[in-house]
Structure formats: C-alpha cells, structure tokens
Length: 491
Image (cartoon, rainbow, N blue to C red; front, side, top):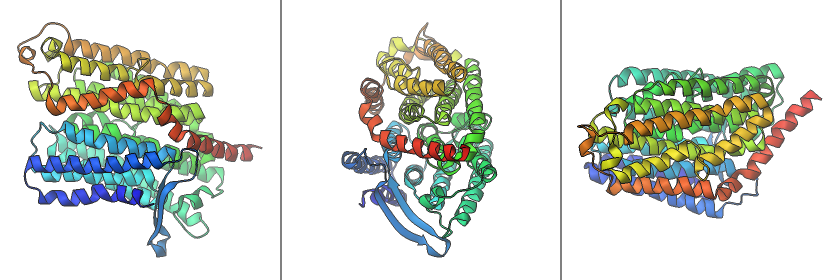
C-alpha cells in the first residue's frame, strides 16, 4: 500500500540530501544509488501488479487542502505503471550517462534531476486534478534551471521561450481544472468526480482546447513545437535526455488520462483537427530534419515526427492506437536517449556536432559504431527492434480511423529511415579527417549505458507481450467508457 508514496518521496528526499554532498563524484554516485532505489521499488510494484484489474492499485488518499476539496491522492493502473517504469528506468541511465562529465556545483545539478523525477512521478500517478497540476509545474522548474545554468549558447533566451510557452499552456489547463472542480457536487478535484460530470458539448469544446494546448506544447505537436529544437540543442545532454525521454511523455499521458476522458464530446468534435495537426507535424518535421546540419537538431526534429505519430494514434482512439502509443512511448524514450548520448560522446571528444566535420569514426571506434547502429535500427522501426512494435500498432490504429491518414502517417517510417541512415553515414562511415582520426572508442560507463539500451531495443522488439499486457485491460476499459459516452449523446 505504501510503495507508491515511497516511490514519490524517495527522489524528493534524495534531492534534499544532495546539497550536503560537495564533491562531484560523491554527488553523482549518491544520485545513481538513489535512483536505483526508486527502480527497485518500481520492480517490486510491477511484480505485485495485477494487470487484469482496471481500478488503480497501490493507491493512497489523504486530505491535503480540505477547504478547497484538494486531496493528496494517487494510484496506478496499467497505463500509469508503464510511465512510472519508463521514468524510473531512464533516470538512472541518464545519471550514468553523465559520469564522464564534471559539472560545476554537481550537487545542485543532481538534486534538480531527482526533484524533477519526483514531479514527473506525481504527474503519472495523480488521481486529483490539482495534484496533477502541481506535479506538472514541479517538473518544469528543475528542468528550466538545468538548461539555464548548465546549457550552451543563447541558453537564457532559449529557455525563456520554453518557459513562456509551457507556462501559458499550464495556465489554460489550470483554468479548465478549476472550472471542472467547481462543477462537481462537492467542488472536488477528484478524478472520479470530474469523470462523472455531464457537461454540454460547447463547454467540453473549450475544455478540450484548454487541455490540448497545454499537452500539445509539452509533447510537442505542430504548430506548438517551435520551442523544442532550440531547447534540445542548447540544453546540457542530461537535460535534453530528460526532456525528450520522459518529460514529453507527460503531455501524451495527459491526453490519455485527462483530456479525452474528461471532455469526450469535445474530443468527438475536435479530435479530427488534432489528428490533422499531428500528421502535418509528422511530414513537416521529417522534411525539416532532411535539411539539418547539426546532429542534435536533426534528432530533435525526428522526435517531433515520432511524437506526431503517437499523437495521431491516440486521437484515433482505438485499442490498437492506444496500445501502440504506450509501447512507443517506452521505445521512443529509450531510443532518443541513446541517440542523444551518441551526440554527447561525439561532442565531448571532438568539440563539434556538425555533420560536415565528422566521418570515418567507425574505423577507430567499432564498438561505438555498433552501439549507435543498434539504437538507430530501433529508431527507424526495423522489425525485431522496439520501434517496430509501437509504430506498427500506431499505424494500424490510424489506418482503422482513416485510410488516407494512415498512408500519410506511414511516411514517418520512410522519411525517418532516410535521414537517420544519412546521419549515420556522415558520422560513422567515409574517410576519417583530422578530428576523427584519433577518436577513442567507448568504455566504462559509456559502454554500460549502451549495453542497457541495446538489451531493451532488442528485448522489447522480440518479446513485447509482458509490457503490452500490463496496460491492455486499462486501455480497453478507457476506450469503451469514452466511446459509450459519445454514443449515448449521438443517439
């Protein structure tokens, strides 16, 4: 019963402990151990979880701000558990990926990572709308400081844009949350009370857009994406990994857990528009990726295209689309962290991430080239890798919704294969130059990170059933509940 509360508080206590650790090596080691404790608790929860039960498990429910009807209430179903698993696996990997870096004021750096981890866990488990909002904002604050204090060129300007975008979206969501709570009989923020509301289609329409804008900015979905490439490029690699690997999944999760179930009639009216925007983003981001000469920006646009497909699969609102979205969120998080780690290693060794300055790295670093190729194959959805399972199910879901939408959405696989393989060719193959001639192969913590990622790329691709089974019952129930509400109004 207390596992989930412990899971949320563990990173928070670790973040409080960090400032008392002065040395960089001590700080990063303690941060890694602390994050592994969270992973151990998550593993126990997965083992004890009953995937056939659709109601939340491991829950707790305490009054927080009683006069305002706000509770500290959380629990996990199959959808939440996959996001908790993603978060608590990737945070140790991200921390391990920083081991060969030395950060000024390392204790504060790792404290912010753990604090952000706690905020994201609140988002993925909250069963109270106000608590969800608190977690949403709590996860934003540390990543802003990580990017602003340890980022690259123009970090202040870039992060100000990111902060303004996300805060504007959050304000719209907060207005919608307060309005919904005021409509419940007891003026409660409880998710069950909000789900039970029977609002008219016009009201649900503006609630849909208030939530959608907030979530679309975080994911991001076209045309709310413009903050992302600059932020990913200027952030320190650990910050980019946190943003791309985990934080954008908060927006995707919000659509599944809050937007569509809370405003089903708004979704019925505006869902097609959301799919169109998602598919435009797939094509647009893919075409822009072709023109990129910077590896981090290329991967950033690739991420927009992949998330566009996830978004389209969700708004198609069928079991295949949602199952694909869940497995692809896991796969995308794993793959994108691997890709950004490749960029980090090259930047650290060669002090450049321009594709024109690279070439022939595979000759001097064969282990690095193989690791990069494995992650790349997952990213381009090669059968037998983790990316294939999710993208296949997503395309099935979009195809069931509309044939032409499925065909256009499928371009992400073709485009992605072209620009990603071209990037591999320019970086790893060809003739070595003065920079790449002395490139050192991976070792130590770098090797460990790639081994962990490689195991998951192949393992999930070969045998995804256990992960899919975790969320199957919760997804099927949610799809049926929303579709029933829509059908009742139509007939």
